[in-house]
Image (cartoon, rainbow, N blue to C red):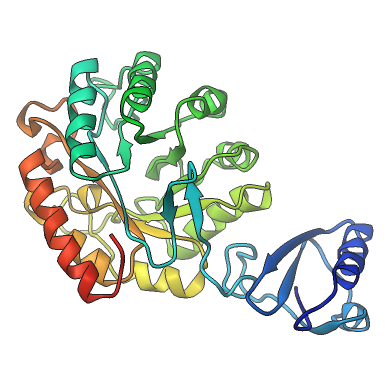
Length: 337
């Protein structure tokens, strides 16, 4: 249920509505728009809308029809926009680039990558310290040592860090280094992990599961939002289909649909979305044109020698060329890169 306050509603009237909601054992979610304050009511509600419509300065009460309440455009019409470390703006009209290797392989590798990315203007570096892999015999990441190297990168370059967290037990440890905690496709419906991430003061990048619908993705985001963390970034990273020429099938239509259904920022992962190096740049352009708020891209000093996902990683030269192409497209679309 959404309670729409009248334009210019007083703090006293808003407080009275919030008090009534809490007295009923429900959760209020306040969204302040340019003209009106909208209050979402979350929980099992048996009362009719008239109960709240009779309160002072309430304009109208609307039932939320979508199963995902806090992520829905019904509860918040404006795009969610937030700053990372007070510098990088995510959401709205901005297009942010997160780039780096699939996995942190060594101190030298991640420092070299960080220096190159910073020179090209990138503000957020990605790198996996913990790597969930299909095969137990492939590189699983450097784990705690990888986190140490990422921490050194942040201290030396000032770049923000996005890295994956695999379990509830690792949330606190990863939060001490990461500026954005990533939930991989395999963990999209790991509900205990999502609930734990809802209780931290860090943005969460939530990747779509390999065989998940958009509604399932948004319901997973709801777990994080309902536990108190409003800073969720949705990520389209391709889904599994019958197609054999690509690793996954990148669903470009998911971007405008998610933007229609939800106020949350949406970014694209063209590296996993295709699994083919030659497709990363054209799909990145398509994602920008489709309205994405950013990209998370795999970049490696020497993709041919990468311990993880080298076949879908760009080298520095290709990545630089991609940035130039994206700047031109962003300008044509009225976006800021």
